[in-house]
Amino acid sequence: MAFNSPEEELEQFLASQPSWLRKILLLDFSFTKDEGIAWSESDWFQNGGKVEEEYIRLLQRVPEKWRDHCERKKLDALKGLPTVPSGRPRKDSIAHEAEQLRLSGKSYAQTARALNLKHGEGSTTPERIRKLLKSRRHPTPDKT
Image (spheres, rainbow, N blue to C red):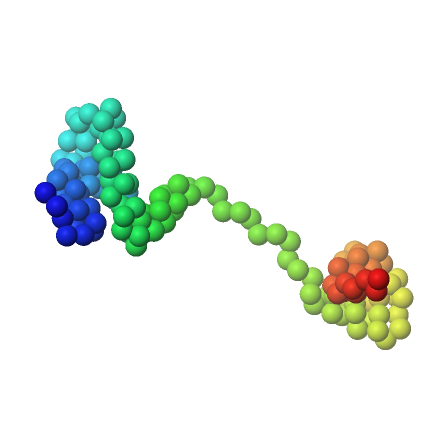
């Protein structure tokens, strides 16, 4: 029997499956009590791979639904994983202050002392100031 479009063929395939299997294929694991019982009594663990392969084959022929499926699969795989912690906060304001002090003629040591007075003792050192300012300089092109 021929179908008009890949999307209709996909819908027909899903309609021919039990509701609990449709939910598994659609990555919706909110079973009702009856669906949970039917799933546990099924032979899904032995034959489910074939049904899923057919579903994936049909799904890949409908690009929009395939993208949605891949996105849901990715989100499902990442669910429960810890997020990556953010890194150290940038020191843009201190770098700007240090740059202004350096432009006014202060040495790295004098700049560090001034910033330590303002932001608290131990906030910075002359070496940290030098590296902070160096990291913000734009590299000059080679003149070769």
